Image 1 (tube, rainbow, N blue to C red):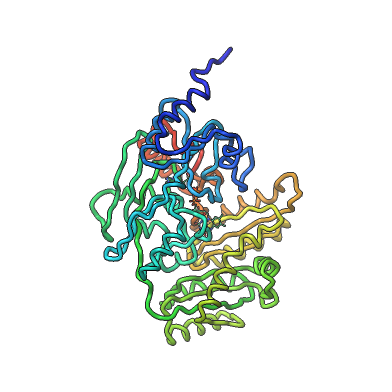
Image 2: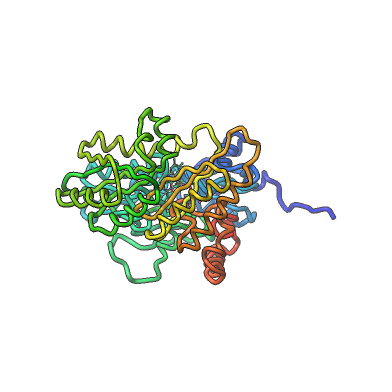
Length: 464
Ligand SMILES: Cc1cc2nc3c(=O)[nH]c(=O)nc-3n(C[C@H](O)[C@H](O)[C@H](O)COP(=O)(O)OP(=O)(O)OC[C@H]3O[C@@H](n4cnc5c(N)ncnc54)[C@H](O)[C@@H]3O)c2cc1C
């Protein structure tokens, strides 16, 4: 039977061009390919978008949504496109709606301890501006210098300082959101406490572009702490011992700002990348920071590290040496990824279950003959195992998938989550039922249907 289409692609483009009044509509192949396919995915996972819209105003966003409703076309909201879970990549025939050019810091209020920003503002840029006034923006994903506050909010990004200052959700006070039907909502506000309504602000934090388009964010800014930050590193025989030490430090009252773990494979990769020589020291490295350190805290920290068998404990208050340690941690991804195929995962465990998980990951690697690099924001129980295989392999070895399945199942068994901070995207949405259970999974679909009944916003991602 012949199938007749109701409209041609050029009809959609013409409508889009009419509706986008301030921004730019791109339809050239080069732009579409660049914005549809991130390096973290294969063509099979996604598809070439029909148009890429660089929105410059809320009117543009409403215009894109009008076209989407008219022609029943999916809209993928994209910000700085650093998602690691195939969250912002194209889908065949979809419109990619970019909020990256909505990049103004609208207000920094020292008096109220907050900033009002557009989604395209780069995390680092906001932090830099806040610091000029003696404040700072706490959430610090590894992608701080390349990802935007809008993307951070839509994924509930975490980072190294989450252990002390919380993830993005703990630092968002209010949002402006445009729904699929074009309604513009103001949620939350400028107060540090809010107990009035259902917390719809938090519903949109981490919603991954599936419930609405975030156009403005009110975030907390904190005063720069008084005192001397202390930073250091220490070496443990293995990741399991390190994880036990981390749980004890977290519960000790020393108030760490950073507790980052790197296993021996990761350290060796970093040594090669940076020209350092940490690998000869031991099986696992902990990088720690305490913002407001005192002699008493330093002593307590030293006692805890020693109790768990840490060797070569080095501590510094020198800002340059501290920056070098942060850089070492930030360089972990390029160091590990260099020249090989990889999948990096992102589970979070209850603190007491981090050590058994470390054991399990090692066991899986040995059992399946895989090289697994393990690192993570250990202070949050957040672990990032990266499985690698040769760059010239035509396909991902089946053991990689098997390892991921086993690790995910073990995480859930231990009471953890398979997405600590990187979100769900298209990589983990098949796990919704297992992680959430059928009732919660169904309720999430009901919420989605209420806010986006035509399923226009980032379909196939997060819950579908
Ligand atoms: C080197 C590197 C290090 C990283 N380190 C970390 C880390 O430590 N912690 C961490 O959490 N993540 C990390 N990430 C992942 C990624 O940077 C984060 O998920 C980040 O929050 C995405 O921001 P973005 O601006 O690039 O958004 P994008 O990648 O463009 O989009 C991400 C998601 O948000 C949605 N979205 C984007 N903008 C909007 C909007 N305006 N309204 C509604 N939805 C929107 C998209 O649809 C998509 O689902 C890292 C990535 C890289 C490449």
